[in-house]
Length: 627
Image 1 (spheres, helix red, strand yellow):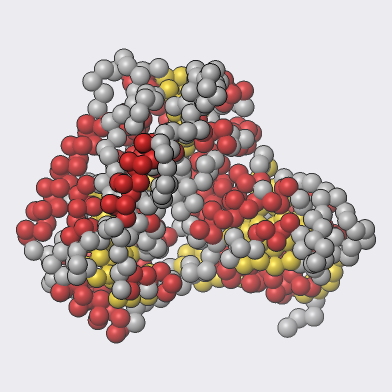
Image 2 (cartoon, rainbow, N blue to C red):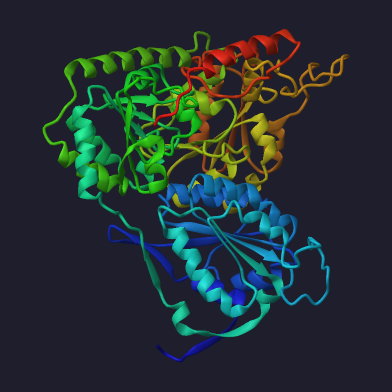
């Protein structure tokens, strides 16, 4: 090793180090940390802020955000669009800037998407005690507000001395690049340590390549998996997000073309097959299609590929109802592969699918089974057409008709982003995904406010792809701040802003569970004190315009089609504002095809809750543990 050193502050050393980190998979090398988002305060302005200025935009591009949580969402959108092979960093000051990261960090870790968090921290040297924004804990002097990030981070460290940065930074990169362990990585950075100088070994700044592995399945596991598939009469593949992260879509299609096994998708896995592939039967679970859920109820073998089996996917453990059903799980993470007492195939999704296809050479499901799911797929497509259809083009659209108009507008390269509200259910059931990364639903954490900043991250990762953020009024009010960032940077995103005067999704759920839509509408108080008066006179279109967006108002289905086409053709950030029908359930939306467990009051006097509890008890009786 060379004895050469370079004298830099700890913050300068970290930025320089990050500029030399790369991932490599399948022979393709990429920058691991592509840019750093930042909002500066006293906890990072003279440290990481000065370091980013000193190092320069070419070495580490800086992106100015408006809200700390939103910066994480943007970075997560970038990482997902990049198939987890590239990520971004986020720096904040101490105190509220740092704690604003917690929601974004949880979202990243739940969805297993890499983001590097660099919150400022209180003084390591403790020159005064307490300092501004310090959390005083009487029984622990080393605790700061950044410790809130520990449970939502896949790796956490506090850099209390300059030299401790070296092992911490290497561990941070290891986790970010690991397809099993990845998620939010937090390096809490005391403000005095950020500015402290140190003689750093030159080796620390050498180019470093982190190989992203594709482990192949172990032969014994592969043989058992192939035997399970060959023995099944009604196999069903559940495609999860791991297929996209592994870029395994073509491998899945090849397996399905050869075997005829139908494919249902989770929210994260939708688009693994094109919507018009004969074996694609759409979403599965509580927000799934009727054909997918009917097949799930009668499947004797469920083949999970890159999925973690959330309660929406399993209909809260009521969906896979065949008495003899068994599970085969292909997953790079052993934790997920072993779920539901499955036969395991621990491997990269692409490597595992290719190996399984070879092991199943010559095997195909029976013709009657293919005919059964083909007929079910055709019936469901008719329901989609009906939900999208608008008999009166001059009328105000329903939410499903908004999706229908967007479906007619987008091309194969467009990306549609959503996370929360009633839209995820409608999208999962109805959206016709045309390409692997067109459908971008954050449904691991289902975080309101994700869509607009994520759209910026996606557009940064894929600058040639039109990007649409679909938001309701509730989500929009959570986090419209990054509109300013999109305008400032000239990041051409489109927002479809749907005004339905409240929390439509939770309103419907409240009604189903005996809550009678209490507290879910955006309305004035009525005489009885409830929020059942007139709708609030807010004008969100004017708000979006005030933040710098071009805004197009659409009052009818015909106007909506024109507005969406104009937005797609625009060369600047554009918002299409549309008010939808709001009475009762979403008009045109197919009912849920499977249950979801939301506990209902076990004792109540109001008739709605009593009736809802009776329904709940009947549904809950169908739960089972797959042992």
